[in-house]
Image 1 (tube, rainbow, N blue to C red):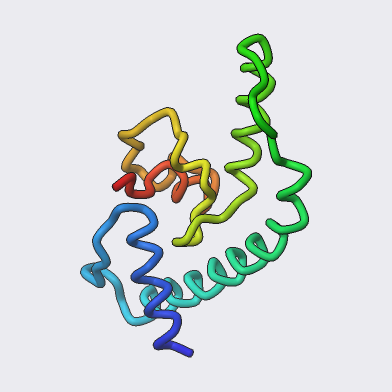
Image 2 (cartoon, one colour; image 1 turned 90 degrees about the vertical axis):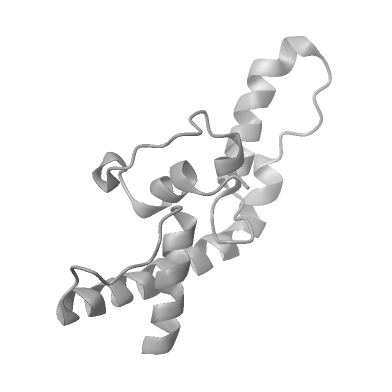
Length: 122
């Protein structure tokens, strides 16, 4: 279980465009970080399972004319937020407004918002 947690811990660093490091972590802090990674994985699994049920409701459909752009854009934004990408990050990271996110982890209300803001775009 700790090996799986370690893998998730490293993947979490990738999701926020950071390099994994244990520098400055005591054994207890590292074990807590591993536990948090397992919890975040459970959240991702739950979000992914909910995606199929919300996918049809969130679909923006095709854009029919330019006058409907604003409403379509809002629906598309919701659609992207409700779908998980390959790395367990909501697809809304692709259409985020700021390509240079804040580096302070306290700038985000939770880890999901941080992954959307910090996920690598390439």
